[in-house]
Image (cartoon, rainbow, N blue to C red):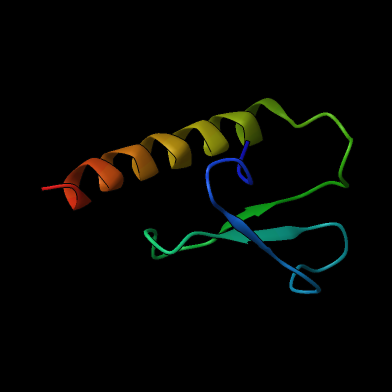
Length: 64
């Protein structure tokens, strides 16, 4: 979902199984724990949804 929304994974940035995702329109990265392919915890799913909603609001502000 993050990749489809335009986020970029910062390789070798996270400690252990953590991954850092950044987007040019958002000031802070989103950090997720767990390896790819593992089920996300409910709080992580909510965090991703919150970030995607925030991104959508920022994109609406960018358009004239």
